[in-house]
Length: 259
Image (cartoon, rainbow, N blue to C red):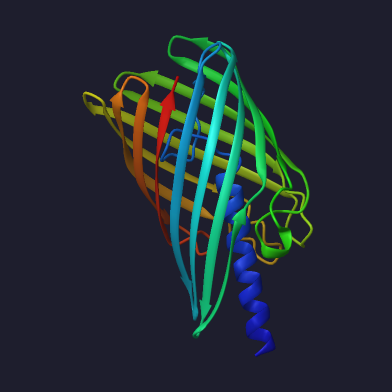
């Protein structure tokens, strides 16, 4: 019984940490995880409201998570944005009829995106950021310490297609025994199929934060973005795990409003 409880707790911690890593540093166009080099423009705002519902099963353990977030972006200049990310999460884990659940705010994140190169459809950007330990680490809702990260972003536009590459380093400071050095790589593509509608695809992987496992969490995602107006987008996608540490399946969706 003691071994099962320890295994359950480790599994929960791993999934929560993976969820935090996937949600806090990545403020891409919903439902994508991979970000693009686009910025809002000087003096302009964007508000994004997003959610993800995930389901994962490993042997006798079934995990469900619901993540909600609000992301406010402001254009300092035409090529520089500042971003505030506020996440709220809940998770439930069942092991042979015994359930554990928690919910609450996770760690806030603040970041800047700087697009430093743009020519002939190719653009490059850097995205440094950090998280503030506002989540309850004892409930597995936060890291308990400030973390920081740096993303390199490359985008290629060739109508109706667009491609985006993310390479990142995440300093995963935490109060547990998780790895502190996390590397991330992902690639996304969008294609306009009709007026106001884009199909999107995304694939990526990163270092497993669980020190006991060397298998990287890897995912693939497909979905669509519908632009109801010039300043209002609706996104919906389905994400599937390609390796065991990644959540088996998750639905991602939300809205973005620019003003």
